[in-house]
Length: 151
Image (cartoon, rainbow, N blue to C red; front, top):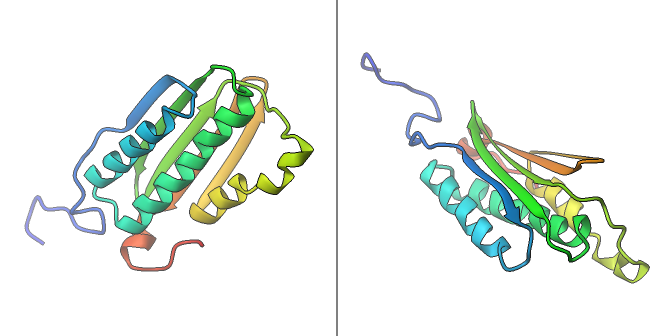
């Protein structure tokens, strides 16, 4: 390796700023725009297609859960953050509402959180008085080596 060069699996990745979208209206019509923005951010960061696809789908599901469960159809804010870490990428979706238990007729629809956990290498959901936070993490070094991702 020549002096001044970096090596390792992240060497070909562009340096990109972290993505921060604060207080975005949590509504169904905004979600595709946010998903596409996350997808484009991940591509500009040089992540591979497997991570990008998992990241986009899991993030969309977390945002859709916020729209449906945090505000029960009423308007409310949503925060979306994406950051490159050493050998990982993290996406955090945060709402500022309170959990609305789905109706019994919606019991068969409870697939969102299991899907998120299956798509991400790690997913942590925390809920409290100030809302719900979904932190998803993908190990980019592992995926760059061609090792299988969860799912």
